[in-house]
Length: 427
Image (tube, rainbow, N blue to C red; front, side, top):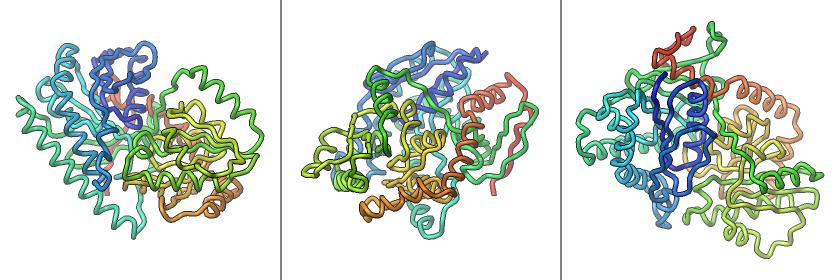
């Protein structure tokens, strides 16, 4: 069995699927260490080894300047974070002596550490944005933004290699990419199942490293007493039930404040009726400001953090930001999404949900309560939308990302035969 170190930046959407995969690898007998960079420990399934390297809160670094660029600030924060945690991460990795580093692709320390340690590394892809079909006009704009991001990110990696001592032997490419999305969601042609019964696709990416589409992976957090009470209250409510979340970062960013206030207020106004319930995952002060002076007829509940995967099945519809992790949870439970994208990857995810009939993409600025009500009515009342959600739910549930990802890693390590797992050239 192999020794594997798993790590991701302290961002919920990136850590969550990786932890689910780490738990499956541990259950299959591998020795797995999770590096936890959160200032408050991330919930881990029992039995997983953890080493804590608390760092500064990336979320507080992003959006610190009201007129700054969200993307460039995020990359600057990521570079500062990598430099801050490199020495401790290397020390713990040297003590663990891994055969493989399994890192989120937004933690570009992996090639530097792998070169020093003399082991291989693989990247997980928490959002499949580069593989998604795109429409023409938004594609032109978004492609320019994505190209700029890739250029900036490449510069960040080069700066890290120059800034971190003793990293001259950095490995340029991972041995494997694991994408936490299904081929169908990405619009990739699907091969027949191999002897293992697992339908798997791989496609070439930059260089020679393959990408395996393993499907979403979910962490099933133990519910707290408050989680259980919320679940009971929501389940017993007679009427329409909506979950609202703009992600763990976006709602609290200063330059997004005006948009978040408008979104929250218009969401409530779209269904401000006694037979409607809203659960907001949002900063309390922000929500209070958004609803100030509004006579509330609906039931409005709020928490700064919500155990989403545990509660999601109770909702009829989700208002979100287009983040892939939340979108995948919605697909798992067959819940439609109205998305207000803030950055280009969320635009593509929201667009893909719309293309597949499982959601709607809405401008975070140009929307009205009447528009939101009409979209919700269509998604909840159209038999075509219901059928599309059922197809996507079946697709997500067939692709157990943790199980498929664990097999892909074992194939990489030579622990199991490939059983028909294939690679195809990306057109």
